[in-house]
Image 1: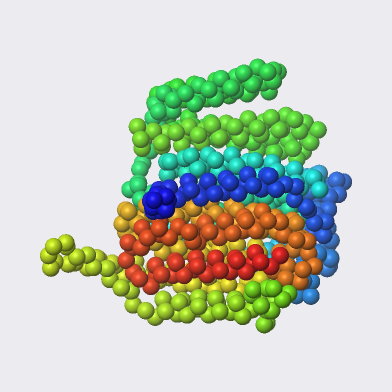
Image 2: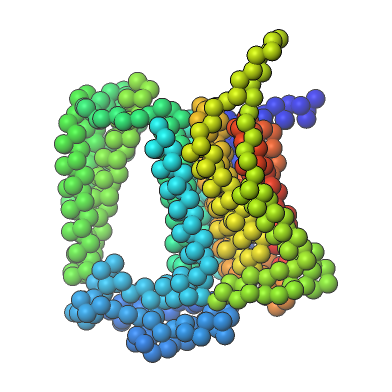
Length: 147
Length: 201
Length: 219
């Protein structure tokens, strides 16, 4: 009897979002109860802060076209990683030299290490990510055009 | 064992519990979609707690996946509900005006502004009154809301430049940005309320 | 090493930090996904027949070529995503492939022009979107606790043990994307015509679930 009741609730697709949200709710409550979590000190791609740098939170260090060390999982697989950890366009170089924080804005784009990770060492992620975006666009445009 | 990471993840998990609790109680389809957009932020928060450059590189795909699915789902929602082209002729905020939410929000803002006192407090309280005024008006011009949105954007950008060039006045910048964002959120909220009212009212 | 259900990796392909490896277990799942993707590629879709009750009258549901073409595209994309999820050796990459399986499943169903089916697809899409939260959060906790996302490192046993909560998040996320225990709800979506494409939904969710079991056993 109870199984029939449960399967009746399950078979109504209106309920599955709320059911899944309830499952997530229980999981995260369990997560709070299972705290604390250990944090490994040996992390990949660690971040360092230099408060006096004009590129402060995003100072990746290293001049462009000179290889700097990157703590990747398998350095032997990415021999060219670390060549563009900090590149600035002439405008953003000017901004970063004249002001304290403006060099870190999107115009300056000091995201070299991010590019290294996204396109070099973890390139497969970016491929899948772009594919997901493409699939979503395909679904939306197909449905939109059909109407 | 109880390091900064554990405290951070605890806070994010509390946020997740609140968000999923709201989601598990929600019955309306559009509200579910909006709530899910908020719930996504929790996932990004857990990734951000990693605190390395890797975290930034993982947030980008995570964010993209969320946005992509949101795009597809909202299109499915539109066809499923039979929403085609709906030109916005005039704004009708009746529904939001009759509900209690704007009154409570405005009251909260005014009280909070009084507690803050001074210039910033006045700004916050004034914003609450503006919100009440906006939501109490029965027929509104789309232009007015657009103008408010534009002003708040300008305020935001101005605050941003204060951060960059005059960092010693960071508090003014913070307040400017906060009011700007709040105003923008307010406008967005009233727009959502308007669309909501047209559909159900 | 001995108690790995996947077996010892036969060979490893290197994409920077992300390794793609084949074990006897994953190679079986990979071949299954490959076979079904090829089947989808070459098979002709079925047509759904409505039979009027108590009489001889029947009519075939009208399905446009464009719709079938789109659904075949989605099914092939789903097959490719499943193959990727079977062989990838990186936790975060696996979660991305799983999210892709989820959204292609939504696409396969949502292309059908029926209010009822679209409603089911929308609800399923909401679950798939919600599932990305525990999925990515689980991968992030893996990275924070072990300091690595590579399954090969987890296999070696040199990194700290993975906490139960991270494994739980990963499994719940995969359940949401594949909706494995929600087959009853999926039956609603099977009212959508077109056999080989809808089968792809079930197969992909089954396969990603089998794979996540292997991943959870690793750390």
